[in-house]
Image (cartoon, rainbow, N blue to C red; front, side, top):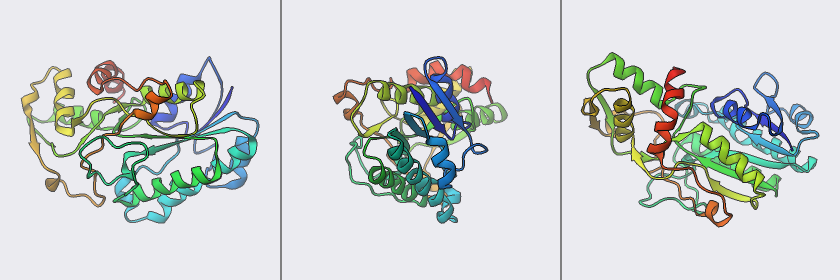
Length: 282
């Protein structure tokens, strides 16, 4: 099976290419090799592949508030062109999406078919990317994720570990809840979905369980041999940023179970498995 990974040099793309190595023929295309917003480049890259995975994205959430057009080009136009080319080549299209397509006001895990209600420019552009993929490529898998961390890029655990080494106390928001998810686990889930021949549709690629940023930081700090009590609680109001953050970013996994694909394990268990590799890379 021949795979094209767009955004192959990013945090998720790097782990996906590594996961595919040795078992599949993979064409790794970073930004230098593939401009996903250029139709000719996309058409040439997609030729003769069986699966197209789009890991390329504008992920600077706050910057999207002041340049929504730029974010739209990468997060919506790019997926549209990839999906159109994939369909034309007879390839399966996999689009990585986000919890930001929801407004975060729920009190129970979001179902895969829950109504979209993005509250930020980033969320709007990613929602538009989902719609574009559905419209252009009937044979698609949309995989939403959240709170990603990994060894091959900047991420929350690396930042907290650095701050914990520099300070005696940390203040972290306790009123935002989500599912910390290791890029290695998400890469594996994407491959398992494709290999299982999962029906076209939307799936959630996050760890199981839930925790606040405060709780996650306590787990990170404890793993470094420090006292979790050094992590104090604060609220989102203390950290006002240009883009609103969803207060509740917990995604349900019923669609995975219906097609016989095991969801990613508990967030705390997976973090303990990931911590050494992720923090060594900081």
